[in-house]
Structure formats: C-alpha cells, structure tokens
Length: 292
Ligand code: NGF
Image (cartoon, rainbow, N blue to C red; front, side, top):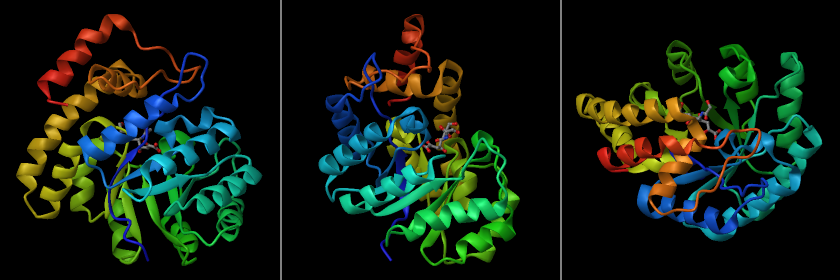
C-alpha cells in the first residue's frame, strides 16, 4: 500500500467573478502549498474546494490541472463523492486514470438514506476502479452519522483504506483507532489537531493548512513525539488564526490571506459572499502577527 500518511491541504480553488476556475491562481496556490507550507499532499475537490458548487466539467478541469502541476511532487487524493452516483463513478475513473493516489467520497447527503443505501453508494464507486477509497465523514455538514459497527462494515472492504474524520467525537475516534489499527485516519478539524494526533490519527486534511501548513505540521510532529505542551502552545496560535478566519468567513478569509501574500487566490463561488474589503486590515494584521 502507498504511504499516504501526513498533512494534506484541502485545496482552495481560486474562482473569477463569474465562477470559473482561475488556473494561473490555482497554480500559485498549489506552489505555495508545496514550497512554503510544505504539506505532504493535497486533498482535491473537497469542501474547501467548493466542490459541491461545481459542475462535472469544472471538477474534471481541477483534477487534471492539479495533477499536471503537481506531478509526483506530493500525494494527491481525489474527492469524487456526489449525490449523482453516475457522476461519482465517472470522476473516480477519471481521477484514477490521471494517477491520483487514492479516491475519497463524502457520505451521500440531503436525502435520508438507509445505511444499506450508503453502503451501496460506496461499493458502486469502489468497484468502478482499482484505486483505494477513503471515506469522507463530516456529519456537521452532511447530517449523516455512521456508527462504529457501520464503519466496520464499510472497512471490511480492503480497498477502503481509512477515513477522513471531520468530527469532534473523540470517544468514537478512540474506539475506531483501537478497533482498526491497520486502517488510516486523517483528522478533519484543524483546530483540534493536537487532540487528534494524541488520539493516534495518521495525518490530517484541512483548509487552514493552505496558509498555516508549516505550523500545523510542527504541531502534528511534536504531538506524535509526545511533546504535548509544545504542540499545544502552537495549537493555541493556530487557533487564534482559525478563530479569526471563522469570524470573517472561512474560505473567503483564507483566500484573502493568500492574496496579502501576493497569491492570486481569486474569489469564492456564488452563492458564497465576497470578502468585506473593510476587514482587510484585520487580515493583514493576522498575516503579520502570526507570520503566515
Ligand atoms: O471546511 C470544513 C467544513 N472543514 C475542513 C475540513 O475538515 C474539510 C476543516 O479544515 C475540508 O477542508 C475539505 O473537505 O476540503 C475546517 O475548515 C477547519 O477545521 C476550520 O474549521 O467543516
């Protein structure tokens, strides 16, 4: 199995005012992630990529462009989950042909599906390629909860190598770690990276690593080395940034931070709002104070 452990940026995608992908800007965001943040890989077309606002052509455009720019310089995970299962299968095949290291798929949401239906969704995507699958669990956004027993059924398939766990249920996380020592877990909440690292996760995937990847990698390494106090000190600083970012608007503010650093991170896709220019001095201060 490939070594997919590590810290991944959930890649931000620059859009123009009409909602089209700005490839020049995207190249800059990718290079910043690889060369400045130093992350181990990129999680492409996740929530931070505004994936659920995109059409199929745009999703393919992003998968292709990111692979062309990154090549083999970093690990790439393709989030292909979609309410349109045919689209999910098409994207799974597409990303696999491009050479993505693993697939990932969000639990299907909106309609209240039974677990049997959710399992069928995953099996359909998994069977379409010979690539591995990472479950994308994010109940705060999807409303879909999966029990340990249900995780166990999904993980029985050896092509399911692990889960991107964006939840704050540290009891379930502990039970998961204990029960599936050979599966991989990526923590999804950047603000709880220390706690997740101590809980034994294998890596993390998050939006704020696009701007604060270096510190986040350090937090993870320190916590893994048992230097919890040092890790926690850095987590405090990272969380000062995250708190401000959440206050001003998550993806808009992360893009604004990148712009302050000279990177053309573009806009968010409508209906997401435009960043309030009156708040720009607060972003500039954040970049300066926290050395982003
Ligand atoms: O953006 C969200 C929404 N979560 C991300 C991450 O778990 C998922 C997290 O990094 C993600 O980025 C993706 O799939 O692309 C948060 O943005 C961060 O912890 C701040 O709350 O929950």
